[in-house]
Image 1 (cartoon, one colour):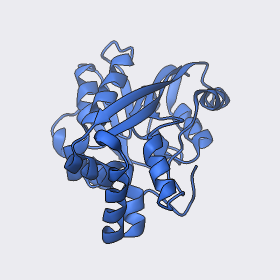
Image 2 (image 1 turned 120 degrees about the horizontal axis):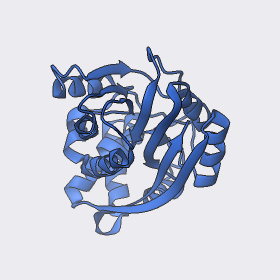
Image 3 (image 1 turned 90 degrees about the vertical axis):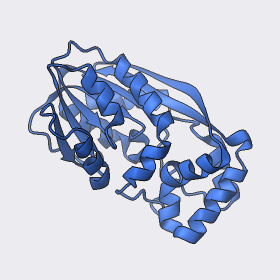
Image 4 (image 1 turned 90 degrees about the horizontal axis):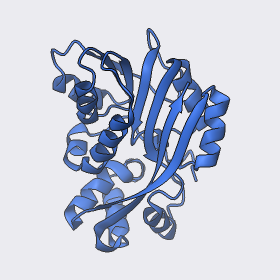
Length: 249
């Protein structure tokens, strides 16, 4: 369900994202709560965005450190402003589709609402495993098989059948984690729902879900696609299927 003709732009509009990111923050905070932490670990936030979930993570690491990683310079700039003067946070601009340029391995990795934007999940899990200490933990929330099905169907009906996401199922993810060297893993598909008023829904689709389509089509055609998709979502609901992962290296 991917095609190279729809490629997610590396940059995000950080300000726009911060106005619509409540569903992602809720899922991110739930993921952080699943980490088993003593408070002195070094944790990689893989896809930190503007740092709102990173803030929750830091509250659990009074003696620890966070490496906040994102591909978007704008997202990282916003995160740097949020944590100005906090020596516990370092910042890395990197693409999760490539080997990660970390100076030393980390004790844990958390990633929320990010990894479905990476096409090659075989390479993705190898890159994450390579920077995780033996015995280190991985906690992930991302889109999984069946995620935003109504949006996918609307796009297909509107003639936009090329999608930029990798929505993997639990079985194939377990195989990939094992191949990447993870010794144990608990992988589940978990349904969630978010409800949006009409204006908020269009902003959310523009800034998050359909950002790759809008970038490919241009402002006018992109805005029309957003309106057409929004009209096909009864009650302004988005039905998510989240791929939730707990794993050990």
